[in-house]
Length: 357
Ligand code: CP
Image (tube, rainbow, N blue to C red):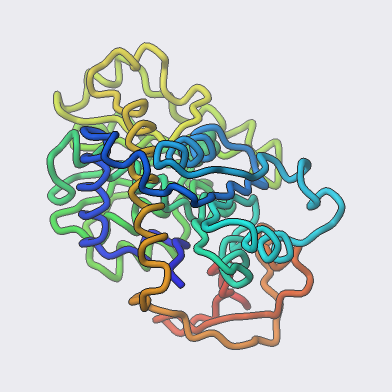
């Protein structure tokens, strides 16, 4: 069955089709108002959300479907100790499609493994957030008219920022891309993502700590929040939380046609004074998110029983447990030590992709 775990589960041709559909939905919403009549979406959010959950719900309602679900783990039987696997097994018997968010990396894979219907990963810890990438690329396409030949700066928490990981994975497939990685060294992009999405593809990139130095060359500046909830050490968060603040003065250093994206929520990393700048596209991005999620829901329901054409990891049961403290294997006790061998020969957890030593 088709699911959406990782943005790489969709080919660039499929992304083009989703953008085309999303733009048509925006222009002609009435054409789509009954496309999902008699279908039900479950939004299972074990972690807080505003945009992703509500845009999924708004998307399904605008398609003529219905919605059920929960908005926090404490409002579900998770609070009584029920596993994520059992929750998905049960709910997938009530609905046609599931969008799930969970604080643990690899939770969406558990959902997929236990579901009777398509599952969309709406964010699994610091791992991936593919539907945010759908919103990002639709906005880039609308604003720049292309997805290639772009210098893309990603700024802030590149370590825990799941939207950054999905965006880099996605954009690494287009031609003429350069990445500028702007972060404090403590929040640098993990080596796995750097190897997989940048070095292995010979994509030009720079790692730089100064936003002011990086900004003049950028076509896109993707700002991110420092992900407080992922830090294991509160003092470390306090030390790093104000690393970057995009101000109107810094925007003066940027190209006239650079665009600013941010997955939101914002804390203080973009001054509200920047909101009035025509290059600030982060609220437009939230609207694109709804249309892209409408297009995705229709696609997955339509193609539910078609053969899948994605690379499946060749997994086996390893003899060591994943040591990543953010991995779902630490809380779902019944999970086996499933691992796979990556292209460099490292053994990685099949859920969170961390190296299993
Ligand atoms: N961008 C994003 O995922 O926002 P929410 O956490 O509000 O869903």
